[in-house]
Amino acid sequence: MFLWNGELVSEEEIQVSYNDRGYYFGDGVYEVFRIYRGQLFEKQAHMKRLYQSMHLVRIHVPWDEEALAAKLDELAADFGNGDGYLYLQITRGAAPRTHTIPDQIDPVMLGYCEPYASPISQIKQGIPAMTTEDIRWHQCNIKSLNLLPNTLARQQAKEAGAEEAIFIREGMVTEGSASNLFIVTGGVIRTHPADRLILEGITRQVIERIAEEEGIPFENTACSQDELMAADEVFLTSTTREITPVISIDNQPIGSGTPGPVTRQLQEAFNRFKLVFDRKNILSIQ
Picture (cartoon, rainbow, N blue to C red):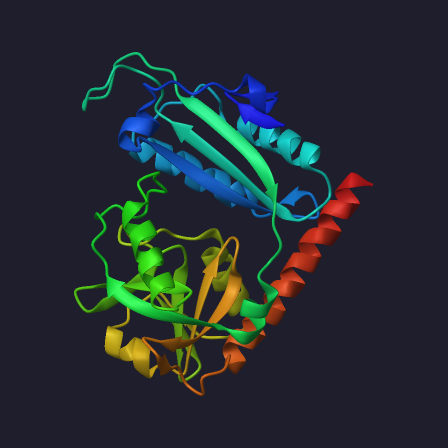
């Protein structure tokens, strides 16, 4: 089933207008919720970010946060008890093409679930990455449909034999093309502050909480490209990749060239966090 403008429908019932502003301008926002054992992970945090994005781009929806969250639960329940993700997209709606925002327009919402398994081998063994210039706009905190710079950066990484592209803006590290990036130096975790130059990831928020619980120093401070290359450890986080070590950048090994101890500690703590999440949901269902 699909969530289409607030109702669960079959795929055949979905019709997207050629005048949809998401098609013309990328005029919309989206969220990707991770599903573990049929349950939406960190749902409230995702909902908060979704509504913040809509507020910043002036999309006004007829669904309040609680009502939409309930619909997402219905969609996830229809998906079943497996692991996957829920993709939700909201565009400004359909109207004749003009660069200004129409006065009267209804937003268009589409949501669906897909099976997805964590990339275990990459999480265990780590991945190679590369750096590239961050040429994106200055409101990366909005989870916008405008992802062409990210797409081109990821393609550049793929062609270079890397798994992720790390953005560098004026000599400073911002984030990955589809991930938040962290370095570990002297046992201290550092990551770019959650400002307009990055998208504040939900997994990033979880990692900050876990680091505090584990007693690992955590700093929201940007690092330079030189500090990135000299780091003891580098890892990235995202909804789909969880915590993935970066073992080389631009064909140079990071630290020992293997996943480091702080990254491993965080991975183990994250897995325990997911187990607690599972137990809470099992108890709520019983």
